[in-house]
Amino acid sequence: MEFLISFDLLFQVTDIVNRRQTITHMEQDMERYLHHRQRLSKKREKTFRRRDEAIRAGKEATVVAELNDQIDGLNANIEYVQEQITECQANIMEVMEGKDEVDAGDVAVVIDHCSLQEAKYMLEHFLQLTINKV
Image (cartoon, rainbow, N blue to C red; front, side, top):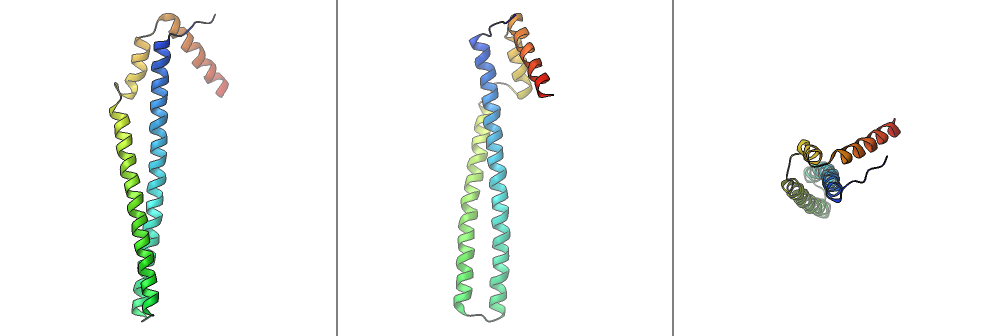
């Protein structure tokens, strides 16, 4: 026997799912930015060493200048990635602050506000999803 789920309950569940998906995507972006910043920092350190070796070896000024330009470019890239990280952190905090309840409370709030028929309907579908995943 199928039960219809109320629009309010559907909205609450959809809101929780969307919020969690948004946070997950933002966290994935953050990890990507952090990894990119780390790669750029390692490349910059390697370029610093190459420049220092070029200076010690008495290489031409053009070689040292080219390495300095590379370092400047890497610094600019690192600064840009850091700005992206900061923005991503702020966005994650904004989404998390917009929540009315904590994560564990989200489910409790939904259950507290649904009828017995809606609870049965959700339980049936969640069990079906679980069985289909196995």
